[in-house]
Length: 134
Image (cartoon, rainbow, N blue to C red; front, side, top):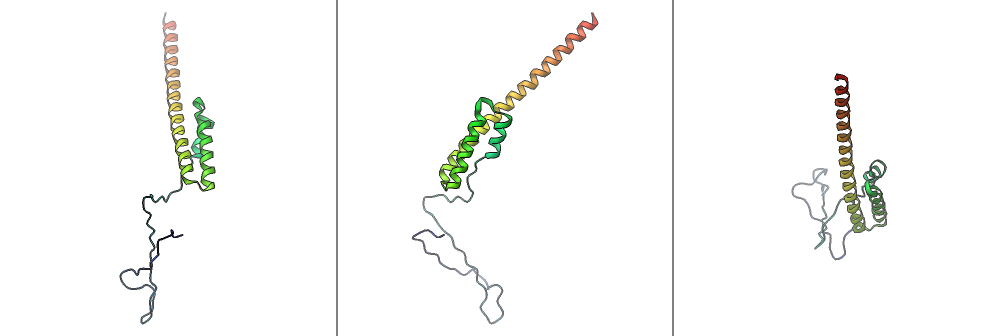
């Protein structure tokens, strides 16, 4: 749990002890802090974005980006299980980028579809109303 070369010291917190009876030593809280030099301390496990990749694959798969994102998400999960945090972070980042691209392309396509249907409906309605007047 403690890195090699770093000693863990017990330091008493300021103030009185907690939970002790008068005349007896109280319970003392201790804190151990591990300091790493040159390496960032990462507390959050890498994300694999597997649910987002599945949704992009099933519902919106433009240019097979959803499939590619799903593959990278599975690779990220495999790397995380194997203990390769850097590899998992790399694959997870790639899956996230592919999911973003697939979501944006699908949203733009959906908006173009809605606009096209609206224009066609408006044109058809104006055409039919023109024919009924004359």
